[in-house]
Length: 456
Image 1 (cartoon, rainbow, N blue to C red):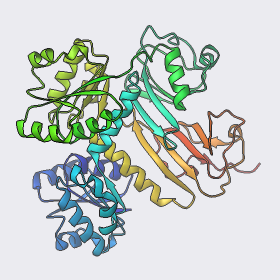
Image 2 (tube, rainbow, N blue to C red):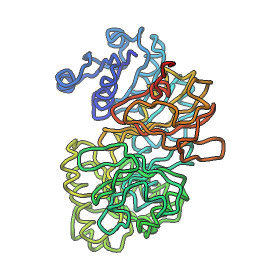
Image 3 (cartoon, rainbow, N blue to C red):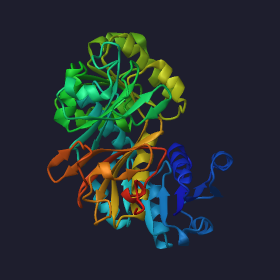
């Protein structure tokens, strides 16, 4: 596909990196020559200097032959005008990043009036990811599939977990819960395990099942002992606002620390049920005076990654059981792992997941569509939900008789109201939702996963 990305900031660059890596024809438009030079030197993309709202610039970038225009500048208004201009000049589809809460209640109208095919709000998406972690605090990360009916829960194994040292094939008999371990992350590697794989301390297991079974599994191994009631948030930006608004509705108590006085006054009006404190959230004295050690969860959402990492470490040292850290710029996975923090949230990666899901789903939408896509294990693996729309040659055949490409696993099948953790005798039907773990592959449909077997 030919794709134009307007805006070469954190989100734009990440999108270009992922889409170019999947061999799409990507063009970046930006007014900043330094940003374009970085993209040109590091990515297989074409760069055009200019404004995304300029018809001349878009025509130079090839808008008339473009399959998809992604407007991802720092201005919502520029993104909306850019998408509208691009559609009028011939772009087949347009996606705009719209972040301001003032537009949140008008997104349906904006999408219709501007002829947008998709709207992405990284901060709101990040807030929703954090809410899932607060609902399942023992997990490093939680992803939902099949409209919330299937969960993938990332759990870190410690020496006190009873299944450490046990092969996977024996875990089912030890713990009576219908779940599947879809992948294991060990050190810098991730692999799709078989029944002989042995769980080791330090591993991250990716557990698949419905909400009840995943909870029961976590409880059985001693990983579900905390209920979140009191939350401290440092940073009153857009994510902090979206998050506070959502979790206050669940009955949690929110204490939000923001350094800017004017923003504190604004938040006090927007969030009357939250306790808004004006002060430096990186100050140890302030955190101690506000009883950080009594919090069930601590969430670092300032605009500086370094501050978020430091205050998260302080929260860990204070004994807060659930610590969530926003990281926007730091790309060093080894550094973050070395700090041994709990859960990391990256708005730009969340955005990239949504866009990749949309782009991949366009090509084979008639046969199988991508409903959800989530990159995991530092991008080494993906969890993808497909919806089977048409009869295909691999349907109604037991999985044990089908040949799948290497490093792929059918983790769950959702059939109407039934959730199936599959065995070899199970098969796929039309209208099933199929959840896959894949490594080293970027499938656009299930046809890319099942290999046609030659007749004997």
